[in-house]
Length: 348
Image (cartoon, rainbow, N blue to C red; front, side, top):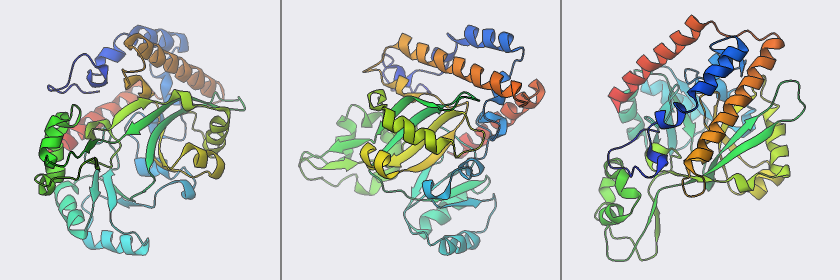
C-alpha cells in the first residue's frame, strides 16, 4: 500500500508496503535458506510466468480459466489501430460501457471504464504505447477477493482469506452538490482529485436526499474502494465450489481471485460469478487492510502464514520436477517490471 500524504497514519490501510514486509523479511530469508534457493517461490505456480510476480500477462493468465467464468476480453497490442479494436468489439458483440487496463499492471493503474467510442479513442491516444486488455463490463452487484491455495499432491485446497470490496459511495442530503458531498465525506475527500476528473460534469448537481451515489466501479484501493474482512464467510460449501473451480486451472496452487458476483448464495448454488483477474505470488490476503477488524500484528501473522504456504507449495513442486528460476532470470524480470512500471506511472 502506498502512503498518500492526506491519508491518516493511524490506519495501516494506507501505510507504505515496507511496514508490512520488513518485519517478516527475516522469516522469508530463513525459508530461502531452508529451501536452498533465494527465489524458491518461483516454483509456486508453474503455469504462470515467474509464478505471478507481477510481470505476467493478465490476458494469458485469464485464458487459463474456462471461458464461462471470465469477461469477454480483447488483447490490444501496443500501437494497435483504433479501427482494428472497433472491429474486434463488433466481432465479439461487446457494447459500452467497457473496462480497459494494462495487460501488465497492478494497484489499479490506468484501469478505466469507457462509456463511448470517443472514450476509447482518447484512451488509446494516451496509452497505446503499452499492451492493453479491453473487457466487457460485468454488472454483478458485488466484488471480492478470494485467496486460495493447494499443496501439490494433496487432494483439496482451501480458502485462506476473503476480502469484500465496498465501492466508494456518498449519500445525498437534498441540499449539497456532489462536490460538497465528496469533500465532506471522511473517505471520499482523500480521492478528490481522482473523483473530480471522473465526475467534473456532475460536481454542481444536487442529488436527492438519501440517494446513494456510487462514485466508482473499479474495485481497486487506489480508486477509493474499501477492503473489508470477509473471513467469516468462509464455509465448507464455498470452499468446495472454489476448490473445484481452481482445479480446472492447470498448475496453479497459490493466489487471489478477484471476482464479481451477485450473492454468495448464487455463487455457491449456481456457480454465478466472473473472475476479473487471477494473481499469483505477488498477491496479498487483502483482508489484512481492514483495520477495523484485525490488528497490525495479526496482519503480519497472516502474511507470515502465507509465506509459509508458498514455501510448502514451491518445495513440493520442485520435488515433483518443477525447476526454480535462476536468480539472474528472476531478478531480470523484476528489473524489467520496475522499468515498465515507471513508464506507466509517467502516463498517469
